[in-house]
Amino acid sequence: MLMDTQKSHTPELALKRYLATLLQVKLWYDSDISDDLSRPFFTSLSTVRKIHHGMGQQVQAQHPDF
Image (cartoon, rainbow, N blue to C red; front, side, top):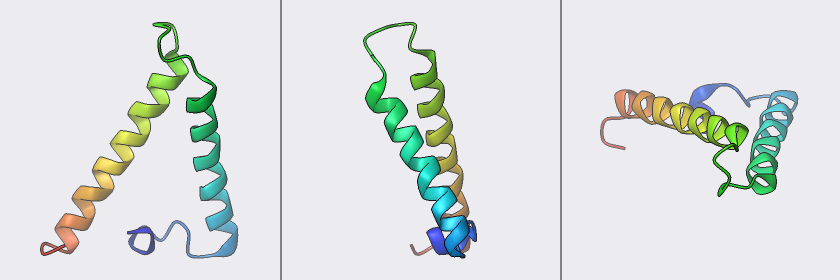
């Protein structure tokens, strides 16, 4: 799936992508999800879910048997 996106096909882009992922995971780790005011956590999680959903649809369209 990572190959299909063409967003990490160079070492520089891969580093940028994986650092962005690391920052999201750190935000989740540092957040208190029991706090209703933990807006950055829920915003981040929603964004990542939308990205994964969109990529899943794209892969399904390109590879129906996948």
